[in-house]
Image (cartoon, rainbow, N blue to C red):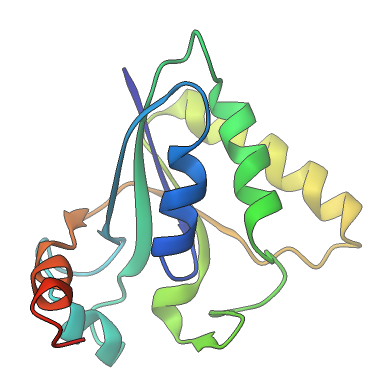
Length: 148
């Protein structure tokens, strides 16, 4: 299994969409890219941790390639809006690809460049080394308790 970690706005919709793709074996929502290794929903929403809401995907590269996943990533959100997707505004809703190794970085750069050409140089998607990923366990618990 391989892993992809992607930020494309609020994580719920993308998690459902990615989960329907053949080759995606597991999805998980969480936070990534911040300045501490654990973060709560409230901390992320404050804008003080620099985390993005992300979808973590485990996938079978024999059934779906990393490049194909990134094509879906660009189809699922607007990569030209800075720190916002639809009504969701804040740095946690930014467009960002978190790469795990140099191969993912190379593929992501290529896909970003291709989409930037299509979108007249307006893509604001960041490309960053995976850092401080943590699952959104607190969010799930609060949602189940109907506190969110």
